[in-house]
Amino acid sequence: DICTTNSKLMLEGSDSQSGLKFIYWKYSNEEIWKKYTTPIKLNHSTNANSLVIESYAVDNAGNPSSIFEITCNKNSIEN
Image (cartoon, rainbow, N blue to C red; front, side, top):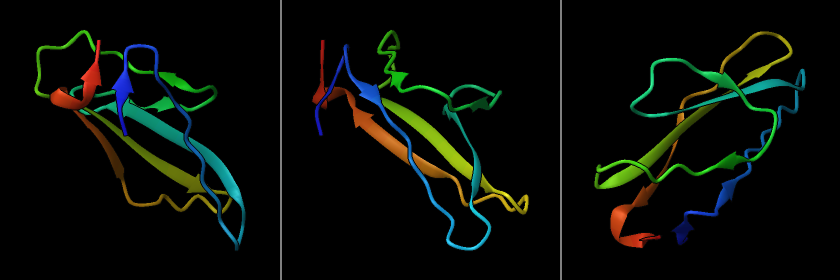
């Protein structure tokens, strides 16, 4: 997929047992996880070769999922 400066990333998840409670996300270079509430506007104001977004979900029983990474390589980012 092409990642443009106007791209927005939508995160979705599901849990067939207890249901999905929250999704959290962050840019890989950040320390603090944010609760996902609206589509994420991709921030390309970095000099890195790629833009990496990490996310994970928590179900209603409190179980976290594995961390999922989404990467946009610099050569696929249109400015």
